[in-house]
Image (tube, rainbow, N blue to C red):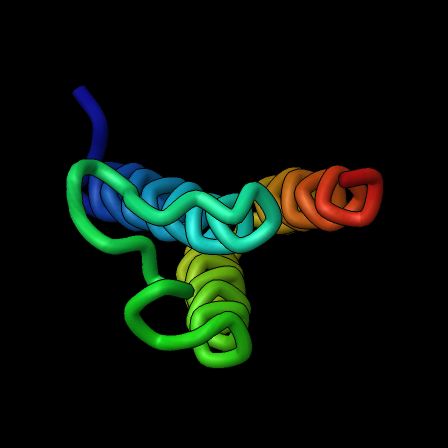
Length: 93
């Protein structure tokens, strides 16, 4: 089986992916002008667009830190490319 350290890395990576997903949803709701997310007010409706965009940015940064703390350069590069792809997609919208 996997070592305890390896399992901790898997948990950290899973958390980072969830945080990354949340960040993308916050930004997507702003771009799509969606009023709700999962039956609740979207962040930009509750906080305003500027504050919600900053929350999304903070979540992207937090996900990046979680990945970096794993200490795997290939993983950092992969997640960095995913974040860059999100940015390209937002610009295209």
